[in-house]
Image (cartoon, rainbow, N blue to C red):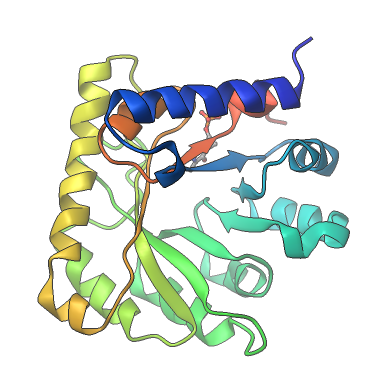
Length: 237
Ligand SMILES: *Cc1c(COP(=O)(O)O)cnc(C)c1O
């Protein structure tokens, strides 16, 4: 049986190889371990093997795991990466360090209002619906700049970049084409003078999962979200 520790080492090695093959530094690409559906103890094993950033998709499950692992809370970054409903935003604002799935103004406003004062601003990425995206979640590219400008002035959330979930495909050419689109939107955003004047620190391009990690790194990803390749195949109840 392969272990979480061995899987993690393998993923990090492939991450480095993909970075070097694209002329990038492996240290410019962060690994987010996606622990959804896996127990808190698996997160602890990955943590003990050196992993510090974890991603969760479901609010209740994530909050329960964060609470189970309260003894190492200050050494872990918790990222919320799933669809977010308004009635769950308070739990996310109070418990997580990052949210990757901002797709509308109302959610951003609620997170800003609900982020406790004693915590640093919540780091956020806007999720973009690049063409062909299966889930159809995320903001349309045409609405991206306005949403980012609105977020950039909110004091308790900090705009860090963009995220996408392209339609799954084994075709690497298609994978790269999807990632390229998000990369171009990210470049446009970074070059936007209004956003620059609001000093948004746009440093995060959250793209790439177990099956398209190398393609995402080739196209400029700075954070890959890897579940299956670290924790194994998920079984949903
Ligand atoms: C589940 C999930 C992942 C991880 O997917 P794997 O294919 O298991 O690596 C990444 N990002 C999001 C948004 C997810 O929901």
